[in-house]
Image (spheres, one colour):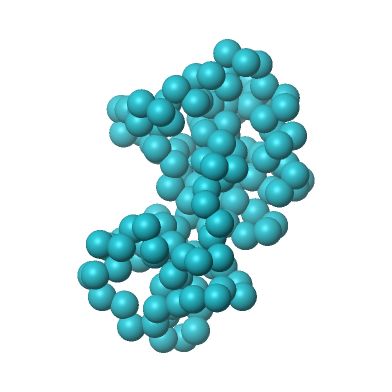
Amino acid sequence: MTHLLSTLREVSPDRHNRAVQGLRDHSLTVTLVKQSDAEIRALVKNGSGIERRVIINDQYAACSCEDFFHRKATCKHLLAVCISCLQQPEQDNRIHLMRDTGHILCGATAVKRFWQNWSLNALNWNDLVCPACVHVWTHPAIAA
């Protein structure tokens, strides 16, 4: 997604460094809720436990934080999502969780591997199972 790179290009080095440091020291954690070729939706939690909703697509990038709302500036939450997405390993090998209806929980399409009758064991395989699918499964009220 070209918007990830253009978002990173537009920010000051100081703001970029704050996002990188937050990811490094875990004062910012990114949970991808939906990731497709067209759009990325994520929740970014800060060290105080406050979650911000982030949406990035080719038309716009938005965050629910005050910094973005009042100043319309690229915030550390948007940057954290961009950095996390660009550092992700290839998603083709992830196992997605599929409902009995045939829908993938994270909204991905054309997946190579899926698990239809999953159990709590899926939580133990965080290196194999799609984290966005797990998030939708374990947080049904947020995903709705």
